[in-house]
Image (cartoon, rainbow, N blue to C red):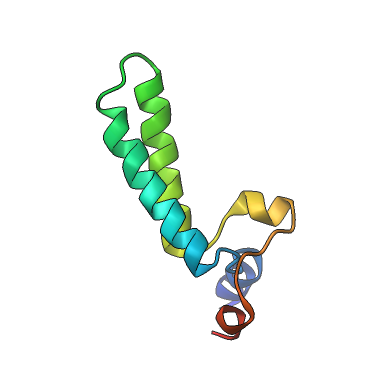
Length: 79
């Protein structure tokens, strides 16, 4: 119970719906492009793509937390 409360406080959703859509779409594009780019860039693009999809799916971005950014609208914050 205490762990769940701690995680809820730390991982408070900070990615809005439009931001989610853009992140997931960009993540998919990066993953697809990673198969066509040679050298180390393919691995970097693949990892970035996976991270974009992950942050878009769970509506949480740790970088946003560092800079105190929240793209969720008033209606989304109530959910």
